[in-house]
Image (cartoon, rainbow, N blue to C red; front, side):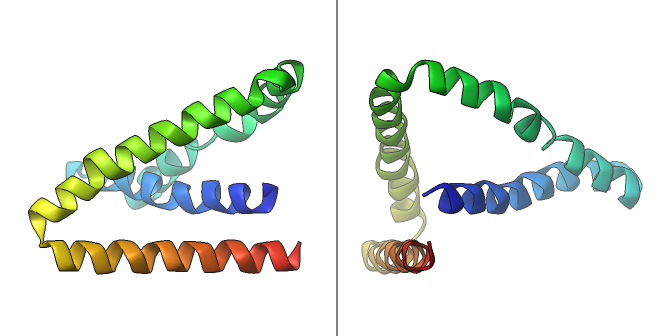
Amino acid sequence: LGVFISASLAVHNVPEGLAVAIVLLPRKVSKVTAAIWCVVTSLPQPLMAVPAFMFVHSFLPLLPVGLGFAGGAMMWVAFMELLVEAYEDTDMVTTGIASTLALAVMLQIQQSIDEHA
């Protein structure tokens, strides 16, 4: 599970960096400066990893509640925001097929990570 979460965070940083670059490049900021800012926006994650671990380690009995809340919040956003918006932009069949394929790929990746762990 730790490898899966680490990989997810690493992949998450790519669109985050692209979002920063998309704002900076049209404003005539050099590519090198934009790349530096893209990296700088991700620096708080490793810097806060140790304090976050110490905090979670201290409150280990409450961890299932926190993870359940986070999972519920993500499900809410996925089903009540993203899925509805996808349906509004396309149709029910396209939304259903894309969602099902995305779920299948995610489950396959998770299974392959579990097999190699």
